[in-house]
Amino acid sequence: MLSDVRAIAFDLDNTLWDVEPVLERAEQRLAGWLQQHCPRMRLSRAEMRAAREQLALREPHRAHDVSYLRVAALAAHAREHGYEERLAAQAFEVFLAARNEVEIFADVAPSLARLRRRYALASLSNGNADLERIGLAHAFTVTLNARTIGAAKPERRCFERLAHELLLPLPSIAYVGDDPRLDVEAARAAGMRTVWMNRRGLAWPVELAPADLTVGDCAQLAAAFQV
Ligand SMILES: [Mg+2]
Image (cartoon, rainbow, N blue to C red):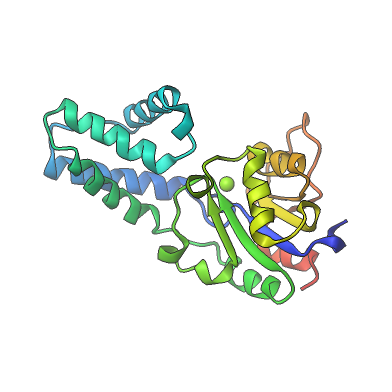
């Protein structure tokens, strides 16, 4: 089945780096900036998350765009506290810079280099990681995220767009991700081959059909694809 694969596409967060410590640090840095520049804007992580979730419910057509949700929620909060909205954009830049200070897993760069010799590589993320800033942009021939597509995984549209950009039929693309539903189940439903990146040694959810391949890191992935 995997012998028909011509391209390998990757989820980013928790597939190529751990995202939780990055988001935590980015939100701390944002909070520090707010405290310095607009001290009346005090929001806990939970309150910020709740504000974004409410906004996503009010504006479902933009719910896929995590950057928009963050800026708009900050802007609303700024208004409520008598600050100019442009501060929200500045605050978001502080967050975004920290959000792209990721620690790529050690197995990623050498494995992508090996895989690139035989496969087109692509990325598809629901998040707002910036591969240029991170220094991985060169590894991928196609880079997509929910904001550029206008939809988020698990929507089929995301995977169809990926195939369109790669100029390949869906079954000749393997999608690699850590999330059983958003990555594996959704990519399979769209017609792709699937790889579960199980870095944490978790149990596969019994209610879902397993991925075509399960690996613990990118070195195992490269080995499985015989490069
Ligand atoms: Mg992920």
